[in-house]
Image 1 (tube, helix red, strand yellow):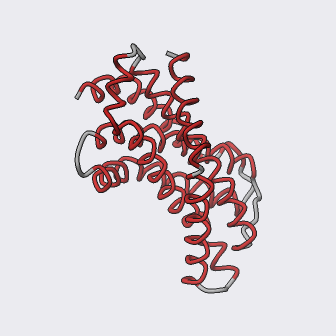
Image 2: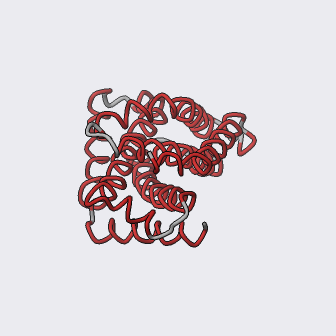
Length: 221
């Protein structure tokens, strides 16, 4: 399963590297939305700092949706999904590989987004460890849920509109906990003992386990 996961992740990341969608489309999208939020709220530094955790995770979620849709649009063309199964790849390996590739793409976006929030909104990082670890587990949760529902939505004709409707309710607790963890990370030095981080760890691991167990059934359907 690990070998299959590495092959899938390598394939997806190579496709993204060659297409340059992340560089030419996703990162500019993030920059534009970040600036528009700043103009919409105003130039008061205190206000921008207060809303920065929420803005960060809203934009990160939208970017994750785009990455998930892109990942499964590749498999939807020419029935490539059936080819993966015919090749004998483990469904769990396919799921894990998709999660890894989406996770990596989201982390790249979040690093870029985090730098933008710091320099444009003036956000201070009082607990860097909490911010990094919470972002990692929140991204794991979103990538796991997104991969599971992305495969389900890819089999329909309305996958572009169905995917957000499936993913958002499931990841709402993750986004809430991530926002609260980031609020604690910029206002105090509570560190990785923050209770919101504990929730993110639980959500991330549970969603990953559910995906590994049920992804085979989703692919067969």
